[in-house]
Length: 198
View 1 (cartoon, rainbow, N blue to C red):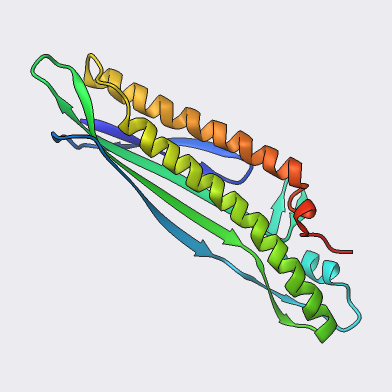
View 2: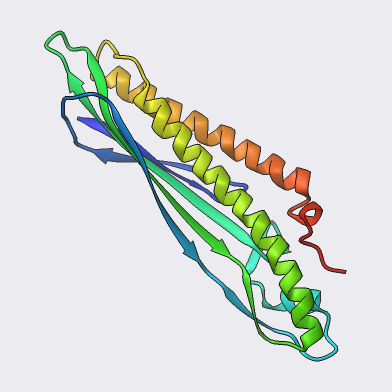
């Protein structure tokens, strides 16, 4: 029997949870990452004379720690692995499957003046670029976990191998979550990348 794990990273928040998978097989370690990306736009209607910031703040469903945001990315990494138990009891990873699921929320302007639309288009381009940076942290975490677990050496027993694999996965997720937080600090949540409104 072996186990995988599931972790949800909410751009700045980490939740850990385990998933049981009963799989046993033999062969050389094989790793693979699959990705699923979901876009979740929310509607914005700007009234003539209204600032775009005011229209976005009124429309956004995104609130984190009491602060409103115009874009947000959630990503979730899940992994499972198979192992081979030798007659001696030693265990070796034979296959790793890692799944990345991302959800990106961005505004979608439904009504605006031409001037508001032009400002929005520039802002959305920069905001999208910033949120894709968050998606990349998910990709990097998934790839690191996939490769890291596949490269684990044989362990004295399968329980030890399972602990090593899941400990490694959780450690890599924490590391990428910290890098992601630093990314938001460094970019001021995208402002230094052009995602700012006057």
